[in-house]
Length: 218
Image (cartoon, rainbow, N blue to C red; front, top):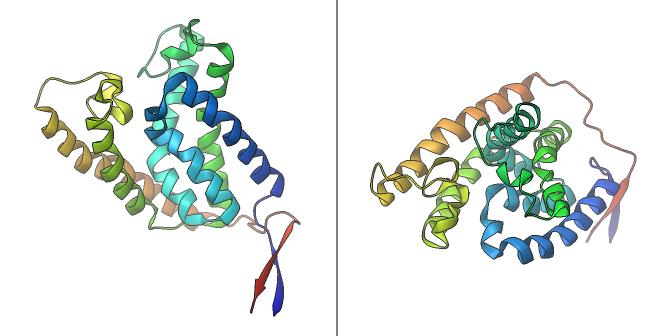
């Protein structure tokens, strides 16, 4: 049996902290929002990031980044503008100002602000995997139809209309099929190209911290 010491590229404290966060977040969100809420790509990302942190997987970080960076940035802009100007740019953060929603639950939603820089940092440390946008596309092709047919009234991932409002301009199934083609081409692919270009220009140190893990092989 051969024991190898392999340097961790992501800090152990972050892995433990994100694990604790997910353990606390899941039951509370389930209680207040229901199981269907975990189909949101931003919520699914919490689980993917958890796995990506422990496996130190550049594929998982790249996968999630191509699907989330644009939408999570829009979320952050909408929230910031609402705080400054009292109005919403795109919508989607109105619940953050709803006093009927418990304050602790609204504060927990600030993970939407944390996710983009965390994903970018993970790519900087681990590298970028060009397969990410394809995995995100497959994820959308699986998840969005479920959102359309299961609890469709919640319009999760905008499966029935943009910005949480069901559209009535075209038949629902036409909108769904268009979504599954247009979003990967108009969102995932350009984000992939930008990340690929950015990763190619990056020369930063990805050596990580001075933590180590043991790899045991026969």
